[in-house]
Image (tube, rainbow, N blue to C red):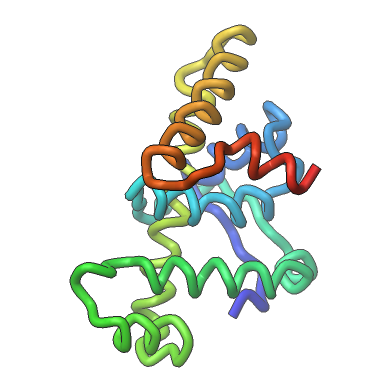
Length: 165
């Protein structure tokens, strides 16, 4: 898993290009690929593959360098998906034993695409001016911080981030 080139296609390719090249919000496509499934899962956003012709890739060498992180995120997403409907053992089997690898990959992919859509919609919207763009970034981070607090985290986002600064 995560050992061959990955391509975003269609609208998702354009969204990633917008987030990386056109705005500089992310340095690399892999950075979007790492964050998107977490955002998709957190906000309950899933997407379906778009078969449009536009593509943007993540090369195998880049995926291999981030493979450990990607596998962790994959397992996290599969473990937390449908946690109210599936038993703990079923979710563990899906995440670690890959009893139904194709289904698990489809679940993960849907959160990747949903996360890309959410990030694009929330941060970039429809052709924003610079001031709107900055406000959207601020609002996104502030809303995420408030969500963390409201979900029972005793630390704010700034307190968490300051540990890593």
